[in-house]
Image (tube, rainbow, N blue to C red; front, side, top):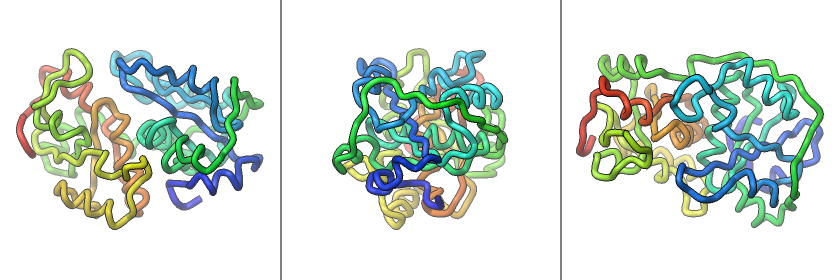
Length: 280
């Protein structure tokens, strides 16, 4: 498994392989009435386990779905039947973003045999892949974490990066939110962006059907935002979910990026964080 993405056809051919573990990472923004847990029980890719990153998270912080302690992560996914010997395929009910977040989480925890189903559940259904109702259970496995701190950035680290211009900080929220012209979906957050950040909306990296754009188009999208894929890049978004999409795109281009886990929920919620409005 050398590509960060797999197709529905690829997964259909391997769905019964004993080492394949499919993970449902479906998630919706706060305020969306849809229930990903209920939808999972109604129908999911056969054998898939449900991964709720709002629950598999650090519960000691008020920030949403921050990375959990590595040992707690390992205990949780091991109990789900996901182990270090598995090839993991992550999908979401809509688009790539939630699956990209979970792909990144597994990589932070030291597991590289993880891929994202390009186009998610809609592409699986379009390929006439079967669905399974009810819960899916597997025998406990053994996941051995190897935390890779180099793939994560904190508030203080991002502040220093911006001050020293040590890397590109790419904010993937929509342009209106980036410029401070649209309110944030989470209450209590200021509008605007970090000084020196670039704006590359994650939607510009995706095709209309929710699949990832081709490599040449990805390079063009980054370049249009003023971002150089050959240079170090830190990504940010609203709460650390869609910021994983450009990391997936960079991986497709053979590059490694890092994610600011607190993202705008942390930065925009702190009185000591500098904010600017308008274009980059």
